[in-house]
Length: 70
Image (cartoon, rainbow, N blue to C red; front, side):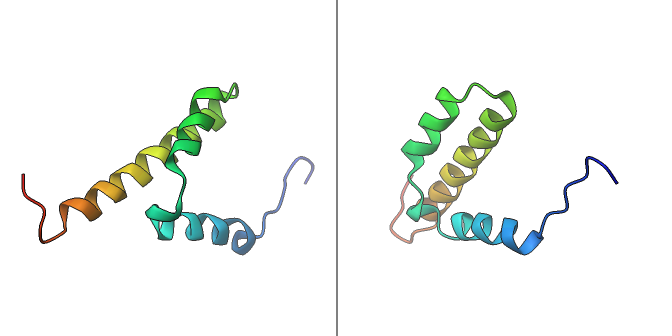
C-alpha cells in the first residue's frame, strides 16, 4: 500500500495523554504563540484546540474549588 504510513498508537498517544493529564503543567502561553505564529492552517487549528482544551480544564479546576464564589 503506497502512501500509507503505519503509526504506533502507543508512541503517538502517550505524549498526548501526558500533555493533557495535567493542564497546569502545560505552558499555555507557548500554545497561544504557536497558534498565532503557525502558517500551516491544520497545525494552527491543532494548537488552537489544545489551547482551548487546556484553558477549559484550568477553568473547571478553579470553578470546582470549594472556596470559589461567583
